[in-house]
Image 1 (tube, rainbow, N blue to C red):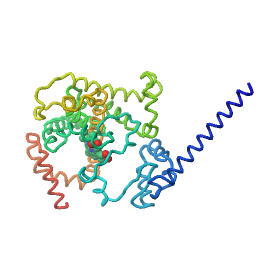
Image 2: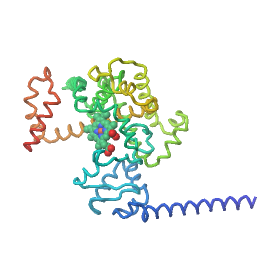
Image 3: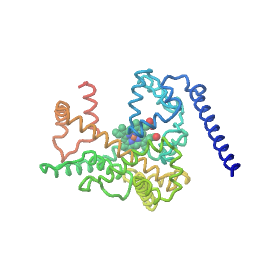
Image 4: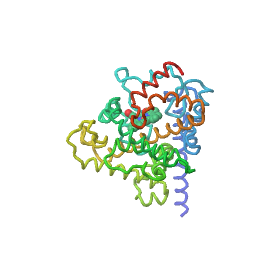
Length: 369
Ligand code: HEM
């Protein structure tokens, strides 16, 4: 018994020693031998990713404000974690974001690690592989492609306006963030999917859609901070995962929803793939010339999750901010009404087009008003 106990203690001590030596070696490498070692920044943040994890997970995405403070203290280039530098110098923009003919750049492999969207074009590391996966999406996001999608946008805007007008004079409280998330969700949903519910038809602007996406987004720092977590979670049965953390049900719902869209797109055959005849983006993708290894339900479902999420949340948040600042600043509000007055004269019979709005914007930017 004594021998067994002693061996147990020795094994434990051995593990602690190996662990300690490993940590010392890792930190020494990061602070002394890493190619980033010479860049300024707090040593603790350079030695471990825990600083970033603390601010992004426990302080809900606040690392960006810490980085801002670091720039004030250390200058335009700061090391913010063991693997990354932050650059705060607009003059350097074209150096970093350059065209492939100047420099082919692989995506940064750490970004998005652990959030289980691997396989989407967004998280594809190798430059050429990223291009291959993104190519079939491009007709939808080129200038011409976006203009062809304008009728979808007009329809959704009018529906949103009708919903707001219905509430007029009723002292109803409207959650604008829910309303805009329903609106942008309907737009990108109609662009991407063949059959889907319309969030703008929901009497409360589909708060479940807002909650689903925001639960997923708020969990991102946890999964990026502990990238091995996803491997454990994916080994467990869904019922156990939901029992441990009920919020994970939202991830499962999201995955099931996008899987369903891909299955529908795969089932459908379409004869004309001209965008004018409007196949959904996912149908177009499923029928694209990508090799079959790229067309698995699993990969396409991740692609769909990224597109639906990014297309909904970024645009809805932008509308939240615009709406707040326009309403909170009387002078901006008045100026905007004046500027739009001419092209809105015949609304709703004539809805201002993207080109008209763009022209108006460039005139005002040129005049610097
Ligand atoms: C106001 C709205 C939007 C903002 C502010 C925004 C912002 C951004 C930014 C900053 C990036 C670059 C991320 C990086 O550093 O790699 C990005 C990439 C991306 N965005 Fe958006 N976005 C918006 C709307 C949309 C919409 C409507 C979609 C719909 C599909 C979308 C889908 C994507 C995708 C898929 C990527 C990755 C592109 C790639 O890797 O090739 N975004 N977005």
